Length: 467
Image 1 (cartoon, rainbow, N blue to C red):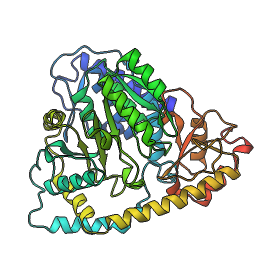
Image 2 (cartoon, rainbow, N blue to C red):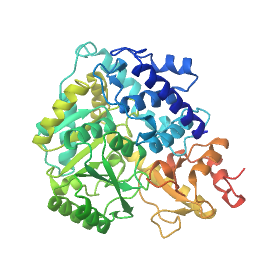
Image 3 (cartoon, one colour):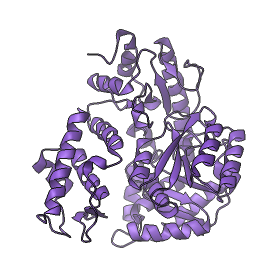
Image 4 (cartoon, one colour):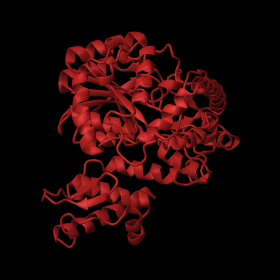
């Protein structure tokens, strides 16, 4: 399935590339919308998006915020599509997004909580309340750094984590992905070497490769990154930055130990290397867990988080906390790329967080996730699965929404994910999180425990994955 889709993408990339080179599509021409082009070319919207993004990376199209894709006005050197460095990332992304688009699948590998788990926050009521306010801004730009009351709330949140931060060190973004993109542009140049964790999410690796980075993976251990590998990478490659999730790591669910956190911050300081700490799942963690930014106080550590996992995946609001010098650079990049965020959305998130029941909401989520992890691990253990970081069994409990698991009979979880889809389930295959070609691991989200999943987990002894 993925191979056929990628062949179609390659075909249409070449068709459009030739049309642009031959001036059949003139410079400055506005391309058809993704929906219209997908219908005309016989592709899915996701495949059509991949075609346009591939052409953008080749330097022949440019994306304009809120307007679409345009043929570049300035002539650029066009790279042959076969040399594009992120084909493997796009291949996996296409498969995963295609499966996610199927509404008939139970999203057992999702990176977000089910909507009914978030409904108690009464988001729809907050949206109505904000929309009715006389000062609601839906007609003009918001503020450069973001909605001021929400920035103040974020400042209080960080101070409660013992991260001392001033207003000029904070910026709101449209989610963590946009925050990471800003940081890549502000701190790095094409050809720079950066570090990621293994496993690590394909979207991060894709962003880095699209920006021309040399990406090196550092193995994630149950208590944090492998520091011996890290030191070797520092000595051999002199990386500019290390992108990692210290708390509730995706997909393993592990959190860094205090001792390793201290040594990691020390190593980064000696190497002159930035640590980009992505804490998007942090609100679901034990409040006592230590952050790298707490130890470093935003010197070499840049802290990124947001509210998409606990408020809404659609109302995307994230934030960056960094030194004042770095924030000055980030502000210019934000102004050039998107001018501002959506003040209306930022107000809705602020209203949701500041009306008194957010803490109770988080406490209930943590309790439900703890119970769900324990239940899922018991089922996995019963049927011979192995859970990462628990001595090859599934007896540990832990925090957060993820269980990273494998069955000893199967080496390729991509086959397993395709089999799960035929059974009505979506599980996240390991290839989405690692740089190797084949992985036996899958990510499961404990918030989606159900009899259908438990029945499927009982099948690997019957050679699940083979048809």
